[in-house]
Length: 102
Ligand SMILES: [Zn+2]
Image (cartoon, rainbow, N blue to C red):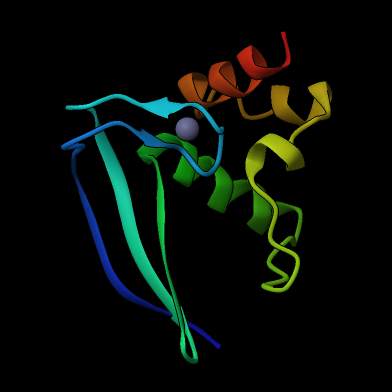
């Protein structure tokens, strides 16, 4: 079972890669940093805050919470129509995902 050890939202001290959209989180930008554990496995999840929120909303709506088959948003949201539904709620996150495809 996955458990969340710590979670914080704050400015990046150095650039990171967003694990949802795959794009860079520049130094100084506020981002989500989450440390998770599953038994003896521990990993850090880093994402733009709105990408993380879109990921939660998207997976909840489409019931994509299989912990053994987790895919980042840039792989999940490859359907233009599906992504378009979220534009009004998470405009920047949707833009980042679309930018990857162009
Ligand atoms: Zn992102």
